[in-house]
Image 1 (tube, protein in one colour):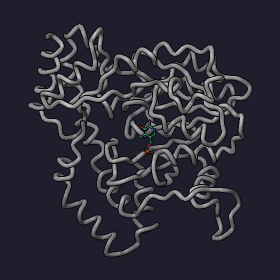
Image 2 (spheres, rainbow, N blue to C red; image 1 turned 180 degrees about the vertical axis):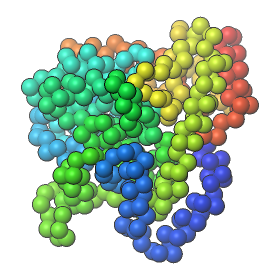
Image 3 (cartoon, protein in one colour; image 1 turned 45 degrees about the vertical axis):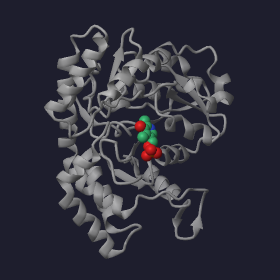
Length: 373
Ligand SMILES: *Cc1c(COP(=O)(O)O)cnc(C)c1O
C-alpha cells in the first residue's frame, strides 16, 4: 500500500546525516531541530504557531483540553473517519455526536452537521479525509453562527490547499481554531516513528497547548493544570525537516498517480473514481474508490493473489463500533445511510510517492480484469 523503503532510498543521504547530527549532539529531547522544524512548518502552512507532540491522537486530545470543555459538552465529528478523532472526545468525558458524511467527498455532511447542533454543542472536528478538505467555509459559517470551536483533523491532508469561495487560498489545518496532524510514517508527511503537531494563529491558545503538552506547566515545576507528556522527538523533527522540503513534490507524485488510476479505471461501470471537491486540492493520502455491486472480499482475495494489496478504510462506521456503545444513546434517531453504504463499498488501492507508470498500469489492468471475470 505504501513504499517507505523506496522513498528512503531516494533521500537516504540527507536523512542519515540529519539523524547522525542529532545523535552526535545527544539532544534527544527538545533539541534545536524541534524548534527549527516547528518554525519551518509554520512558514510552509502560513500559520503563526506550530507545536509538536507525540502523535496525531495526542494532538486531538490536547486541542480539546486547550478549550477547557466540560463533561457533557457535545463535540460533533463525522461518523466515517479513523477512530482517533472520536476516541479522544469520549476519553475526556465529552459527548461525541456523530454525523453522516457526503457520499462524494466522504467529508462531513454540512446539512446534517447543522441539524446536529444543540445548545450543548461546543466544538466541531471536521476531518480532511483521504487528502481532501471538508467544506470549511460552511463549517466555519456554522461555527461562527453558534459560537463553536473548530478543530481540523489534518492527519490525512497535510499540504492540501483550501480554496475559499472568495478566492483566498489557505493550507488545510490553518482555518479552524486549532489544526492537528499526525506524522505517522505512512501519512503524507511521515516521520520514522510516531509524531504529531498542532497549529493555531491564536497566541493564548498556543501558550495553553504548549503548557498542556508539558505536564500543565508554563514555569518549570509550577503546574497550573493537569496536562500530559507529549513531545516530538528531536530525531523525528530532524527527519521531518528533511521531508518537509520534499512535501510538495511527494504530494505531486500522489496526485499524478491518482490521475493515472482515474484515466484507466473511470470507464468501468463497476467503479466510481474519487470525486474532487471544488473547494480543495486532493493530495491523495488514500486513493479510495466506490465499488458498484461487487463482491469486495472476493475482489480483494483475487487481487492479493496477483500481488496487489488493497485496504478498506473504513469497514465499520463509528456509530457501529462496540467502543461507542455507551454513547449510542446520543446518536439515536440520526441516519448514517451514507457511512453505512460507504463502509460496505469502498476500497483503497496502493498509493504512495514511488508508484511508477508500469506499476499503476499493472494494478489498474488487473483490477479491471478481475472485475470482468
Ligand atoms: C492517523 C490519523 C490520526 C491519528 O494519528 P496517530 O499519529 O496515529 O495518533 C487521527 N486522525 C486521522 C484522520 C488519522 O488518519
